[in-house]
Image 1 (cartoon, rainbow, N blue to C red):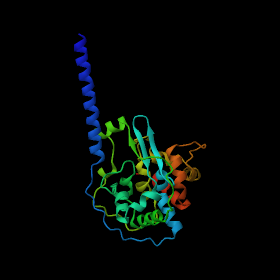
Image 2: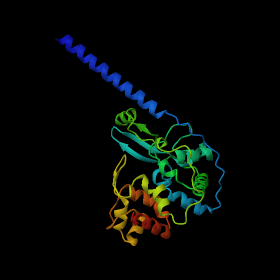
Image 3: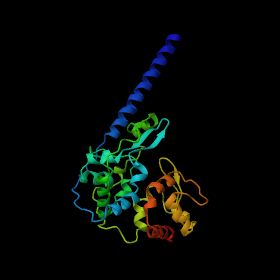
Image 4: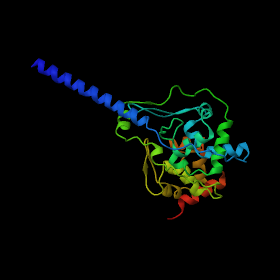
Length: 273
């Protein structure tokens, strides 16, 4: 009997080891998958003053994720530790064409895909705003990393990768993009498509990897113009409520919108279909 139990236990251990090795191998295959997207030359140069180039870049959510010198986006037990890299050290390793491919297609220098960075939204960035982003990123002075280490996947994250449950933006962006040349005078819809829609839908709640985001139309309709400006400037809800990710993104990025732009955004969000 004892011998049979030992055999069964050994078999179970072997099965577990095979499962672990298989999950690791499949997750590594997913992480190493490459995308056949060419890094096309980007020749557009900005004519904006440096201050305006930075303002536009920041309204497109660069700071909310990367902060000044890198930032931990997710640090969950079992899931892993997802790090947005230090742009001041990361960007110089890329050509302009490679940065544009990364931003618009979610494809890194080595051809693999990024996780979390909203290339599906950034595919809508106009040529002049992309030029502004590049000019601003190129102007950044090198800073030491604010966080130690790079992205590491835990066992739950590895299982998600192996099962194809971890979303990669490169999977949803078409290769043949035709971005508009210039930022529209009324940025309401443009801001929704490049920024807001990464986390939110207009009329229904949206579940992301980390949280449930409310529908934007009813939310925007419930805010006065003054309170909506406070929301985007400080990330604070009515009554001074801290809104977590929204508060962080507003403090890093959305506070750079002008009053007129915030009014345009609210007008678009509250417009009846």
